[in-house]
Length: 185
Image 1: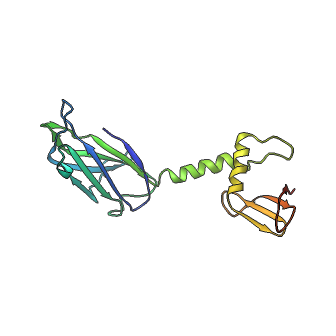
Image 2 (image 1 turned 90 degrees about the vertical axis):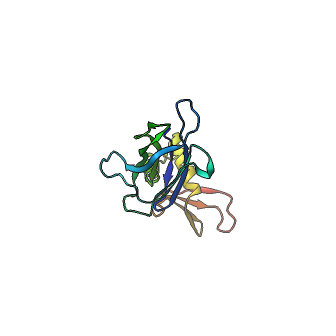
Image 3 (image 1 turned 120 degrees about the vertical axis):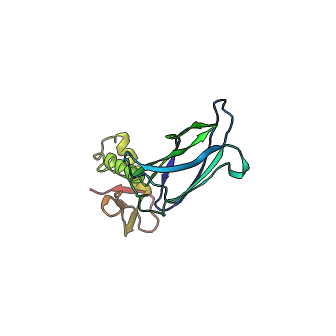
């Protein structure tokens, strides 16, 4: 039943749905005064119901539950964390569904990881003059050419991923209408 729904920015409101079914796989109302709680990572005893609004049989559709979670409702929802939404009270066709994880999400826990990985793989990814670049070095050069750069006179300077450190410098053949560039030493 569980599904990862994404990595979200801090303090947004999530809105998702899930369907409960009986043993015959027929959509069936989540009953028994249902409660959903959010768990943070592998922590126990810290689960929260803050900011959760649950609508059972949403839009009069049997078995369809709508869940809205306001991530700004409590400091419990913090960046750099993974979360699981779990049924902690409830039954379907008189059978307990306690412990069912209905959705998983994270808050800004994948953004930084991707940036760090990219920087680690590509920093100083330059081939020496006259040497064929590796695929990583070639990709790095392409990224530099579509990233930040500046032109002063006939000098074109590209920036590293941090957007402040010089990556490479080139000399342009014409300051007004360049048609070629040569890598400076």
